[in-house]
Image (tube, rainbow, N blue to C red):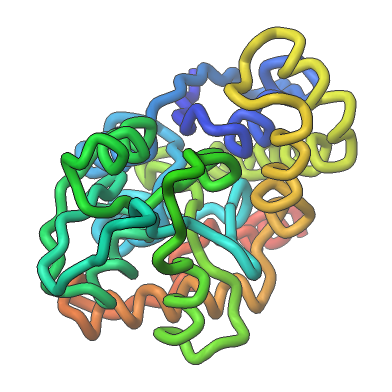
Length: 285
């Protein structure tokens, strides 16, 4: 049994549930799945808890020796992304207090590079908006479906997309979440896992209306039908099926920024940490 972990937000559920609903099957493997918030999954990956897990891209250099990076099940922003929000009447000073969704998240890395003197507290992503509204913090970074609909007393101080464009030099999508696979799995098993997951994402994207309806009818998704459609168009689309050249360059740029800021001990390239699929063609040649 391959233990898979993903977040409970709409795009991760959407990309995985083709397997749960039996649309994708493997004669060789069986999967079990669990849903937890992304920072919990980041910490679980650091301790090697799951065979396959959704992670923040910013975490990956810290687990690269234990986990391979999958090409599929990825989420990038393209003109959009997490939002730094505050109350309309609140002016943010140099050392403002901010709530982020986790130390190892991609938004936390980019935020820290841009606001190095801010006082950071970490919250479950579902608690960030209420923390700002209550005055516990001066601002917060909203992620997942929270970016679609928040209290009218709040305004956007900064878009993480704009921050990313400035830090990266522009022209690249914003790397948010990916998937990692435990290196201790046999290579043939690892390749089969990536195949199945890629097929699941492809089928989900190609049958979005049907799968979305099934998820909504079963109460699996937190948002309504209109918000789900908007969110999936943003984060679970054709670009989620398999990373292309531009997405790989974006991930590399994130790793480079983290390395230069001394978040990582070395600067790695994503391409060096993918599952080597060329082995399959050599094996049967």
